[in-house]
Length: 112
Length: 117
Image 1 (cartoon, rainbow over the protein chains, first blue to last red):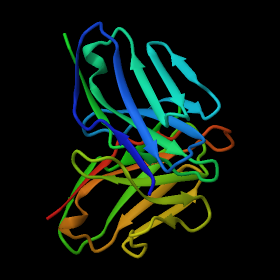
Image 2 (tube, one colour):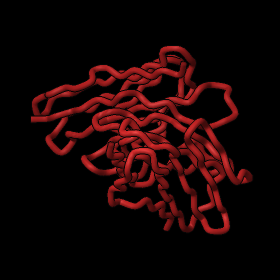
Image 3 (cartoon, rainbow over the protein chains, first blue to last red):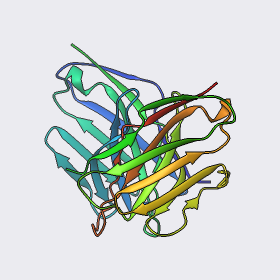
Image 4 (cartoon, one colour):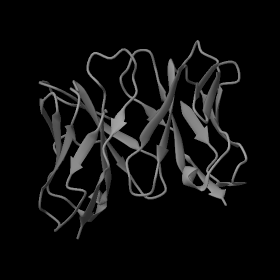
């Protein structure tokens, strides 16, 4: 069956460091991969979208990579700040459908 | 841009009553909207896809007669939880795609916390 895995354990890093979050998938061939941020009690906020034929996408301090051979996406936040503390969700979408399938999310804690 | 609102933000109701949740795209048109539910410390689970002017498509295991979805306009979708029970207590979140856009990112509402007593 299709599976999308994110590290369920919280990632704790020091302010100013680069945070790297991982999203792995099996039995799936996504056409698009998206990353969202979710704060407690709030809806997710769209951050970045990367297509299957793209290796890397950047937006300000954010960088996403997509390796279809490894079946993995990495999400990086450089020069992290306490305000970056949140849960980050990866989501996949196939070519055919509208729907997104979400990973379980990884909670990031940036300490000052 | 791409703001989605939900109303109410939280609601408490008694078992057996029905609750309606509204999802609006404020500054764009949305042919397609989605309804999710999320339990504490879990990820989002898609309940149904709502298409303007047609019937919603429900995910496996979601009772369409219990979770009524109406997408009457390009900016409004509603979810009605009928005959609510305590096990329906959850965080309900809607999202919308911008009509006519080639990419597929979704814009989420702030969520509605439903508590059934």
